[in-house]
Image (cartoon, rainbow over all chains, first blue to last red; front, side):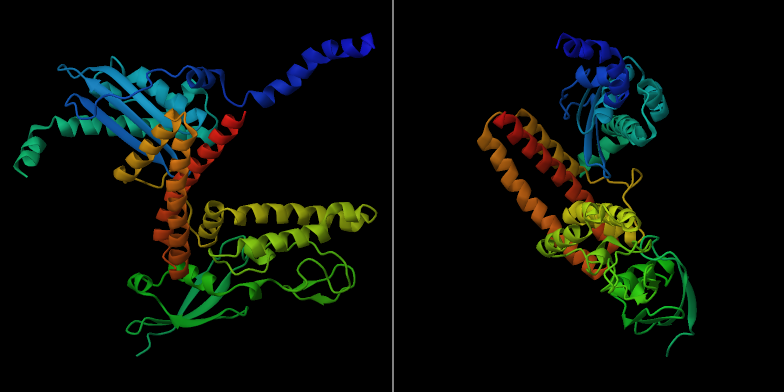
Length: 159
Length: 273
């Protein structure tokens, strides 16, 4: 009887080694961002200094919102996101907000999805999640630029 | 009046047909009339091209879509029973030869054909389920335990039927599969920029993730089921018309609503413990 009970303990390390790779489908960096997402929330989208990017992934039905707050020197001082989708999409947008913070808008534009994918060790089938995050950054920056473009403002004011 | 005969080489979707057909297409521009006849097959299509199709140049893709919607079961390659050697009817003897022996699955068969349906979005899911259960009863590998030759075929068929059934059962996967047959797909590059729609989806998701009360979730579910039904009805109509691009756009919307439905169900599971 005792032997049978011990058998579990003896086998445990072996079993864990066999089972572990099947459980750990996501890299630890993804799980970290997924379990403790950074900068979740919203900024006031009507604020002139806030740029909002809203993007969707049609193939999987994910939706991602990423917002940036820019100070008068063109530096991103705050970023928030909300993502409804898979773990990789959440981790990608969480990482994206971390990266854009403190960068100038020109620097933020240069963030590539491949960098995000590399940092999170995303497998090929999840690469599109990092692409979505890149699109969200670009969309947020574009929204900010449109809001603060004097030409456009005049146009909207006259309408 | 008729424009000169055009020879169009069609490569049909791999799952439906694996070989090329030479099709003779005569196209009369003024009347938007299209007739198609196959040289080495029995495809025949003769009919009007709808407005949206007629505006396009008669190229491969456009014809593919229309023709595929029209022709079904008659397209399979001729087969012989591996046991008795007689020629099997590829519709009535798809799974079993008349001699009672199980047959291997043709590689060029579509999920729709497996159940004897036309490749059509609006399909009777009850009839599908009945057909599925009946087939699985007859081809279940457990029945062929003692017969080595047939066991492998039974296992292969059984797994194929499972895949086919679950693909066709849910509207989204069925639509996606049909889209694939028609040579279109939804991938990551498919642009979707309708901001109002995304905003709407974002709001429902936010509401759902913050909901603690069952009544609140029930309300979301109710509104969502209306949207789901709307999408499904729209898909039946657009696929029927052969408007592939519109079907694709609706399918994307359906995916978002199906995701919300999954989340509603997950909420109920959690609240039940």
